Amino acid sequence: MCSGARGVPHEKRLWACAGYAHLVMDSRGQGADTSDPDVATGGVAAPGFLTRGVLDPERYYYRRLYTDAVRAVAAVRAHPAVDPARVAVTGTSQGGGIALAVAGLAPGLRAVLPDVPFLCCFPRAATLTDQPPYVEITRYVKLHRAHAETVMRTLSYFDAAVLAPGAARRPPGAAPRAPRPDGRGHHAYGARLDRGGGGRGRHGRRTHPRRPRRRPHVFVRPDLLTQAAAL
Image (tube, rainbow, N blue to C red; front, side):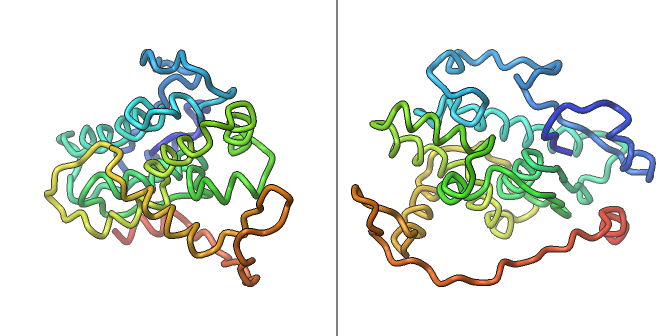
């Protein structure tokens, strides 16, 4: 399980009580037991974690967090009590986004069960809400407007919605890989924006045609234990 916040031990008993081996990953630097000693965290950033080291994808905070999650999957598979062919990942909010990213980075997962995932579709999310955590992007760019393109470029490499489709391209037995700036995420962003994102120019006029309104998809979250029992 990828954790969105530390929580307390009794909140993490569901899977263990149901008879599953269960590892909870502590999110480094987020106020619990695991520190984040990387020196890049000393750079300029908005309060929070979303812009920590955001000017360099090699030193970005979520690169380290995603790598921790991939290593956590490897640790679970190496445990003698675990069938390495039947490993699943799950998480809520930040943990849901990490779970989606790990699906594209760690090959051969049996299932991925994200719940209300964060860390997805950064350009759109930053324009839809003025609430944390996405507002951290807006606040940073407001103070450092010359870095706006660099910020979005870095975020594109760590967008869980861009990484998740890689799960279908990662055959069992393939070596896991750490997140790295290979251009795919940024190119995917460019393709989406070129199709018309409803952006605005200097005087508030739309620079792209507005997309037609569509009814939102409604996802009903089934019982996780029922899903797991079928694996």
